[in-house]
Length: 269
Image 1 (cartoon, rainbow, N blue to C red):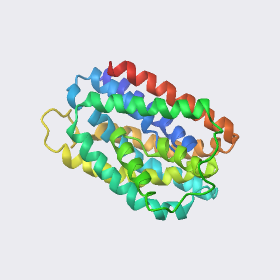
Image 2: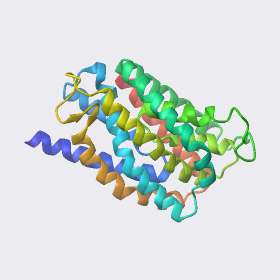
Image 3: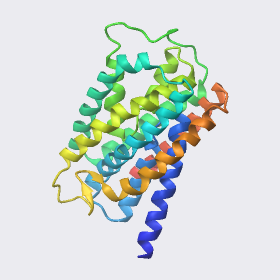
Image 4: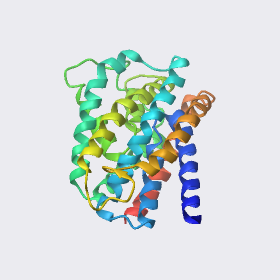
């Protein structure tokens, strides 16, 4: 009983931190939830070949309510570009489904290294060149542009994140103010997390290696404990985001990603 109480408290604390970060950076909190859940599942003795899939799938499930809460808070501050959302959502969704299928086919360690590698690359960009010159003054409408939101959906669903890690960086390179990029990324989180969660439920259905209380690769225990906390604390993160300058918010985002990447590299090895 004591171990369950400690585990429950840890899950609630993770949810609170993830919710604040979701609102602050538009990242859906997954970049916090995934490494923490992977570690917890390791302690519980979950098969290492599916440990990362369970962490990713559960993270995506918790991102569904978090994205709704965060996007609403940013929309209230007019920080969501609905035109970009309309143009990119279908491609983001298609990419999310593709990434879910790929993630269900590979070993857990592959996902861990993918997560850490991409997070570190993005962190270095945000830390070393936070004010780099934009590629364009606005989001282009050229024929190849759909490849970008498709890639965002694919990589995000494989990593168990809401898309903010890639969306924020991409939209700022396309001339969008970072506060609007963060708000728009929060709404993309829903287009990624909902179909990807359903995909992980289906691809993991009936797997004998799964821990108790799982629906496919999704841990219902983790979802029930983390999701309410992230939903309630996401608006706080959105309020905090508007207290920072654009440069400081970019640097803070990069520092957080670097810490998360180093931690997961260590765990994977």
